[in-house]
Image (tube, rainbow, N blue to C red; front, side, top):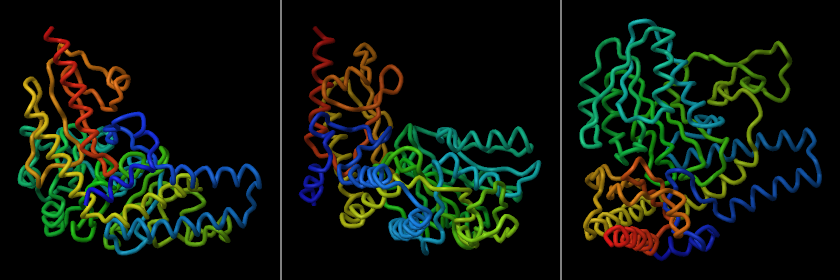
Length: 388
């Protein structure tokens, strides 16, 4: 299986320079996605754009919606809304729930701020209650979330993969419980979509968001949301623009007939360059296969675990079993190494330093064991220099 992933490496010029293990911060862009983006921009530069071409972009966006739906196991492209990023899109969920003073929502203490800040704002403005599950050794059990619910619980939200610990939530278990208890289930998949397998129907997710500049290897300024058809009618419309209506092309200034699809949450024009790059990445994802991608990444994760345990002074910061492991792993090392992102980059390794003695490693399908070996050689060299 590794052969087909090694063949993909030829599409990533950055891999000629670095062991690129920082997708959890920003994904590497394959050359074919860059070419698609640049071709669109060059056409705009050379030929301009008339209204017909502009309308064709909306038709193209609908094609990409269908591709996304297939990728994440959604019913169809009508469940997909585009937006600027996961943070912006998650506001659709939080602000659309008809929350009142005294209502509560459930989340957990290490969730990424893209999720927590919206709830903190509504706690301040509406008087809702945030119920926060504690993290134990970097893990959050479904039961710890369920125990916080009562008759006034209006939502339960998690990041599919926790950005700080690499813990992968059991979305199927959480989603099933939420559906049984009629509690809307919201998921931020920015640290998983494109790497870890997602099937929104099997996982019984009501609302899912992701930005595309990490594991989907796209540009900043583009994300998408999935909204379950059964859940969509219950969301209040809190923002409006010219594109929310059912006929965005021919509608008049007072023809406010809302779209019945997820498009009703798109206020205006879409970032076309990002869509042209995204569609190419999705094509590759579908060709390689969701199951194979996840398994390959987890195999590399296991290899990283093994290599770290071979080196005195290094350890896995948050050690998860395979069921909850992801494409993110954090390594601890002696503080006296004083590693920085820039220092590692100069050594040909791209990682993300967290605090004084920890680094986050993001493994994608364009990585291989040689990348991990190069990281370990760098760390061993730093350890040896410190001991002299």
